[in-house]
Amino acid sequence: MARRLFGTDGIRGVAGQFPLDPKTVHAVGMALGTSLLRSHPQAQVVIGMDTRESGPWIAAELAGGLARRGVAAEFSGVTTTPGVAFLAKTGPFAAGAMISASHNPYQDNGIKLIGHSGYKLPDEQEESLETEIFSLLDRGVEPGPAALQVNQGLDRSYVDHLAATLPLGLGGMRMVVDCANGSVSSLGPELFKRLGAEVTTIHGCPDGRNINLDCGSLHLETLRAAVLEHAADVGVAFDGDADRALFIASSGKLIDGDAVLLLAARHLKQEGRLTAKDDAPVVVATVMSNLGLERALRLNGIEMIRTPVGDKYVLEEMLRRGANLGGEQSGHVIFREYATTGDGLLTALRVFEVMRQNGAGLDELTAELEVYPQVLVNVRVRERKPLEQLSSVKDEIQAAEAAFGESGRVLVRFSGTEPLARVMVEGPDLARVESHANRIAAEIRNELGSAD
Image (cartoon, rainbow, N blue to C red; front, side):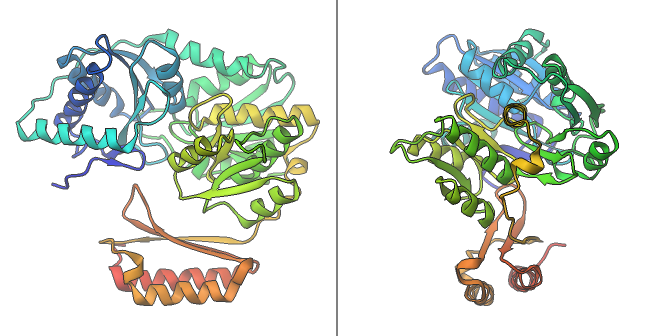
């Protein structure tokens, strides 16, 4: 048994198997309860979940572990990850727990733990919890679920908070909303209609197994078709737990997280609200963001800072620099003025706000973003070794970097959640980009043994 539980986004795996078997989930609840009671004698935890069929039993088992330590749990039922973060920060809760595997298929699930600050737990706290969890498992802890009843008022307070950030509303805006059969299947259309939008909903009928299935932010084809069919002003797609959002312009053009960062940064700067500690306007992005974004921001007098992939790294850099806008190309955008984490619903409201205030569509608002061809190749591997030890891979990476110079980028990294090596190559010419990406990927397969 691998002695590792927490990855880059909490605990994740196949539901019913380690580390998401009943005993381990129960032990997570017990360890969390023990930790919270040290500083919160009357600790409570808010638990939410997405629409996976395994969500209810995982939530019940987690609550059972908490109860064995005398910690009460409030259950918000189906909600979003940022919704749990909001409740953990603003409610009478010492922590929050979200049961979700984000964009993964329904067979997977996960546990994301959030502190009372609204931020994900720091690495040292996760390490301490891991030690206690394995100690409990070694001693033979037995599972035992707790009965949970949904508190409808929790979601209402979250939706009220979101609506209050857009007092002018969305009257008359025509939109298509792809709910990914996930967390926003009810919340998203409800929020946008409440603000006055004309909403066409697709993939909003979860059955426990269709979350993310050929829909949502990873599969934008049906959203694009629906936007064109309905002559909508905009389309928005969420992932399973709604911490990210991607958009389709009225023309059918994809608007990704890079484009959102550009239009949001420009808008905030114009209003004097794009902050940083040294007063120089800054946006925090990751190594995956396109060179075109960096250059467009520079033309607007805005510096772009890159971090490793992962919203936790984006947030850490934002906090360090006092920045209030950052995010990922994948659509995970953090508006720190309003939230402690990426929030797909909040991102959608901010995008719609810019559209309304400028009287313009997303095609016009993102016209100055020249996107460099970028190719991402995922290589499934049987083992991980430091890339610097793989001589043939290093040679191909260096060859690509020399070929592009300052007009391109090469990024090779291992996924934090899956057994994948990710190869990203970016440059001015698609054919050359594809060629270098495929050569690097081929050498990774040769060196590490593809598990395809």
